[in-house]
Length: 339
Image: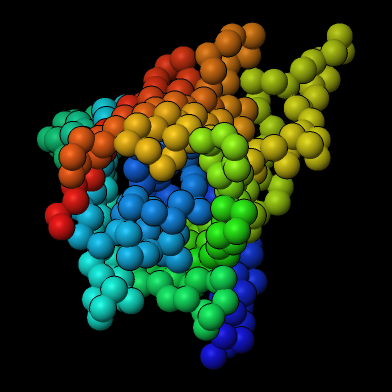
């Protein structure tokens, strides 16, 4: 049974290695940050195994009994007036041995003015997308490995066009309690459109991520390292704004070296007092920093920081993430203990 689960997991991973990243697939909202805590730690965290019920949206292998009867509500006033949020709830069944997880991700793109090919107004229209997920995790025998899966139902409406799809996430998690070390690999958004917008079937934003974290023995700090988008190498593309010209007018594109390529897959994060009622979090996303930075201007793109505070049976979280000089984002979250 254990060998079958692991074999199927890596089979799903290998058969989709040529999938795309941003701008080359539909339903891009599926890979947005799922909570303020995740946003503060750089945007993608795979290894938090505790009360944080929203973590199950990104890595289903982290679903555990500490999430029992926890309800989380998160919202972000995103870039360009876009609003999106997530909600998650978990319930433990069968003498605290089986935990089931449900989550919702929703994004509203706002109102737009429509015009035909002659520039005549056709009125306003909106765009919105959502996904409902059902998740479950199990321990693989008596080992330190855990396997989890999410099944997602996706709906999308952009002006008069609608689409419906299904997808699945798979996570494999290793927990070493002796040294407080976790490691995980997650395969996200394996699926397909069931109905398309206009007859053209588009791929989903498939993604493979690997992460590690550890709580230090003598310092109340947990560090996080995540390698994102492992399904695609190279991930970087030359920036036209960095093209150079010589005296003869010959243009040379930006050259992206191996180290630069590697760093664009890397996210770093740290959480101070991770097990206490008050937490301080900071993260750095190298790809975001490199792709959104403005030449000859310091704007701290890629940096994020936030905090969490527990008040009786509620936890409030806030994060500010730096994107560029043109716009940044704030994330708000509330988790309620319903027990």
